Length: 623
Image (cartoon, rainbow, N blue to C red; front, side):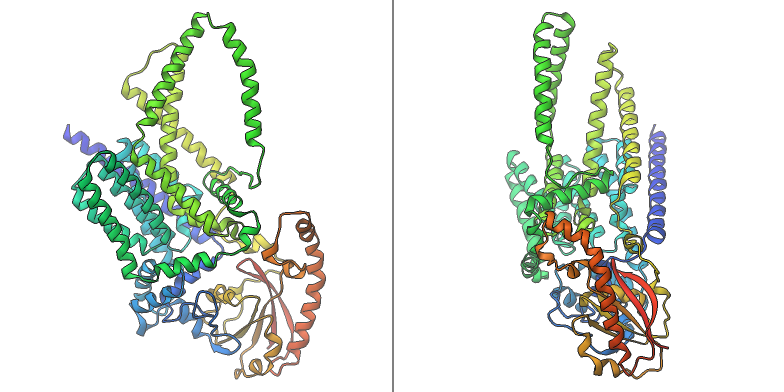
């Protein structure tokens, strides 16, 4: 018997390993083939982790007040030193700590990334961050499996959650995005798993308390949203201990969790100032789009689309009016029908059966334990926090990254719901065909088949209809004519970058980390920098990568005053014409300016490209 159990366990482990390996292959394919470019935050990850006591390539602070590396010729080594670890600065955790003190995030993720990069000094590759994500993906899938096993005692449902999460576009996006969200996801799952062990009484409570404190400390040092989710879970368990009258464990648990949060503040005192700074810096444009509830609808719409492929409207709808009308129409039909059929035997049996099922359902809801509640409430808390503190509409689909940590939690809840629905469908079918029930084992198998079938349908819908992803195909997004890949421009040339905003220089770093010299400035200052531009002492060819004002600037629209009204729609419709005419004028002004520079020998149009979704013109101004 024991041999049979071991063999079954080995089979389950083998299936799990095969599924996760296939999912990791899918992740590698999506990362290397489907993903076309970087998000700015991914490059900030490398800069904050590896740049020695310089958090940003263009500034020494998050707000960009203390500008550096602008309006002057610099060596291309500045770019490479920003992205990679210099040999003499390996394992410089004091630098990582300092850099993040100037940003709005805690430093643990960046310290781990810096550790990986320190083994490969002066080398930059996206595989350092993605490799870390692959490890976190494996660990997260193990935790999802264990969590489901603890809750359901079913290997099939546990594997179902693993399948649904790993092949889901939301799960894929979490791990192809080189940022701290994959690590935050892992710590939230670990926190949930340890709490489930507490609930079911598995293991020594004191050891679990210590592990929870350690997890809370590292999770809080990874992302502040973790503290929100873990705080909600802790609140649920404090209430649970209170209802169980386990006052000693309640006090001990509360003290340990509060101590862990205090350790985060003690180890990183910038927590409070960064949280205030983040809220203070929240883009006021988000309020002009409609306030919290509008941001909430946009966020939920993006999340649902990413996880399921279902597109919800971000605008207020008449759903509740339609629902009320349908219910009234049903009442008009059903009430007289029930009155006329009240004496029929089959109708009386049906009513009796329905009453029993409603009672059982009510009892089932009352039996929902603190684990389910903590998963629901922590997910809701993170959604509320994101909608309240992030300009979702302005960020667009990329705002879903703030919800990545709760995606596996939502998947777990969804699988549990599917299993309950499958059981309800099975009971209804048996009642309809006149059977009282089935053997327990056979009933479970049928439920699992129904649930797995539903999951496969959900995955198919997800990949057929989902339009939310983190592939960053800016070329396709902009439909740029005469497109030129920045990576294919000559490496033995000097470059002038004219940008609307200085921080966009961060997005150029992967393409130009090995050039001899570069000059970065903005469109407002360019025409006052003749002497600085002429100061170049180099015989290399010179190229100009130039961003011009976008349609909102050209149409005279202030981004902070955008409204979803007819005036705004009219500006959007006419912006193309405005931009086309004004662009020609601007390019002529630039050509005149550069032809008058001593370093300029030509003004040859090369083509256009995209930098973080912004179109740029490329010219050769010296051969």
